[in-house]
Length: 321
Image 1 (spheres, rainbow, N blue to C red):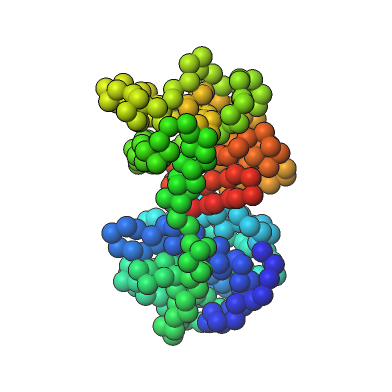
Image 2 (cartoon, helix red, strand yellow):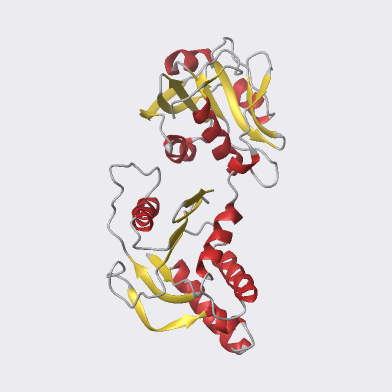
């Protein structure tokens, strides 16, 4: 994340790409009711900031280079700990980040709950998404917007839309009807804190590599055909329920570009070319699928993690949400 420094933050100089990713991640975590995201306290010195905040306890969780994905890894590790008075604190300095959680006193917690922030010294800002965007608030109440451009703000539906487009690229029936049907099926299957990974193989795939470990269907389920007049409504309902179960099952569900469900429960060895994916097993598997897309072994790949992260990869295109 090397790049120009963002000098608009009160008392801090932070690499602009780091702030862009932080803004995007916090924007994606806004509460649908309040419009607010969890807060991240940002500083250039973890120990001094913890003292300035009046922290009564602190725990260092990790450190890494401020490369792409580092923000998500930090939030994946720290946000589950940020409750009962604990808050995320991140030091960003010289292309590196160090992060952890700190306990604030009762006054600090009350001010945070009211959407405000104060610290007795410069060098700490509170970053969070609000209904108006993503803002960094300093000790004097000064506020700096660090919202990324609209095209960089993650959109969970965008990953699904691109998945559906890739799944119907070679559909032989009414393409628009197929897209609407598959989109409704996936949104229903993905509702709630459900982790799902999907892969799209080439139309010519007939089993075997790269999905050697999958349960391969001898008769693929032609969902676009069932969505049109060529399939009965009763059959479509039952096959949709079956497809949703396969989508939500452990492992990776496999489609082809004609919208046919070809296999499920595919487990792929992790291979991320030295990367450290920020999440758990599903995100490591998705990292391996991205490499397969890059190498031409798959047409596309999609993920929804259990914490709501969505990503999509196809040749020449990658979306994260």
